[in-house]
Image 1 (tube, rainbow, N blue to C red):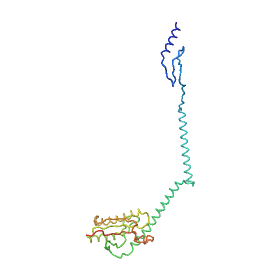
Image 2: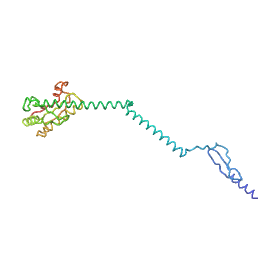
Image 3: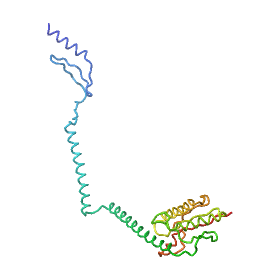
Amino acid sequence: MRARCRVLLVLAAAACAKPTDLDGRTCMLAPSWASPAYECTTGSPVVATAEPTPDEDSDSEKEKEKEKEKEKEKEKEKESEIEMGGDTPPEKEKVVEKEKAKEKDVEKEKDDDKEDDKEDEKEADEPAADSKATIAGDRIKLRKKVIFKKSSDEIAEKSHAVLDDVVALLKEHPEITKIEIQGHTDNRGDDDKNVKKSKERAKAVRDYLVDNGIKGKRIVTKGFGADEPIANNKTKAGRSKNRRIEIHILKRK
């Protein structure tokens, strides 16, 4: 009697079981006297994909780190070869050459400036033809050249007396309502730098006149750089003449 009951229970469970889709296979609960079993009619067997273990991950990371270390060592070897007199890469060679050329240009410019300063000092020490600044047509003629301190826009102390003459002349002639102070350089060096220098020196002269009592609205400034030479730039004396300050009368009452 008990055996019959068991058979009936198993058959009833099998009949009531619902189909189960396991990886594309249709399976039904099959009658069994032991543990539950399934019969599958369609589908393919499940293939398990292997997941990388933590050990494998750490090994691959270590390999990457080793590769990076090798690359770094190669770079260091290249640098040490260059330092020890090895072949320099073309890009670095160009950079080094440019830097050397710049250094030479700077040194040459310094030497030129020293020569210029000596020549300007020599001209400033020569006796003046006129004892004071004078009006010559539409210009104010200076009795001596205005000189500046080495490679700067600071007026040399020995030129203060020259500009004091201009202050006195402008005070004596209030009918001169507008003047233009012009800065000029020789042709050596960079054009943009020469223009900048000529502008700065013209402004320095204007500032001196204003500080000594001349109204700023009577004065404008302009820098020409090397565009308007009055002598040959191939000689020291010619270049010295070209480095100059000129004062032009723009308006009178």
